[in-house]
Image (cartoon, rainbow, N blue to C red; front, top):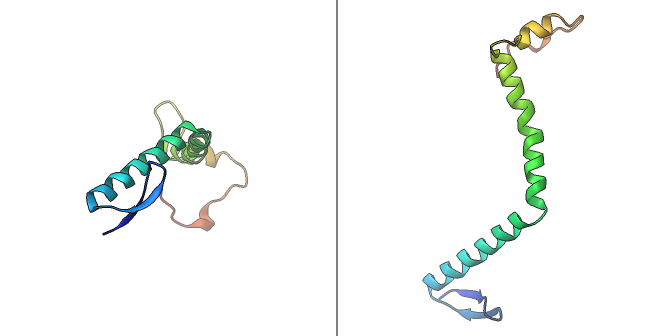
Length: 91
């Protein structure tokens, strides 16, 4: 029989498998709610935006968006910029 910290007074006691699963689910839900309500969730969104935005922009530039020049067209106009040393590189 497993042991669990039961929320009422947080005492350690023997519990059934179903009770252990319920206690684990309760603790997981509380931890998730505490994270979402805290300042860390806002920081996570900022970090995701910082990481994802350049990747999305690079993919869009590589594919070429209607009305915008493709990445290859832009790089051809940059003097002294040569990607041939990288070989074949696909996104």
